[in-house]
Length: 143
Image (cartoon, rainbow, N blue to C red):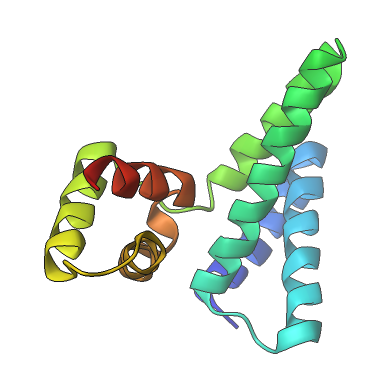
């Protein structure tokens, strides 16, 4: 069992004792995502769990935008709280200047590479610490 998964389980127990129903629900949801991934692909590493949680945060952010367009402010607030809880389990994202330096280095080491190859190499290097959209944007700027 990964360290992140153990942390989620410990935090679930703490939320249960504190009667924090919102945090408890979000953590149980995260653990169920991990369990479903384990059923499909075996034990999950911390990086795989971070990827799962990042995808879910992205989905929730998109849902928040839709709720805002529909004028459902109560749902927007509810989703933002859930997003904040999930983000607390994700590593800090790289800032643009750090990411730009990595993209520049990879670009210089692969002078004849296509855009997709450069993006792939950068994403392999930074993992879940950077947003793929930002990496793509920076690679396109440098070409």
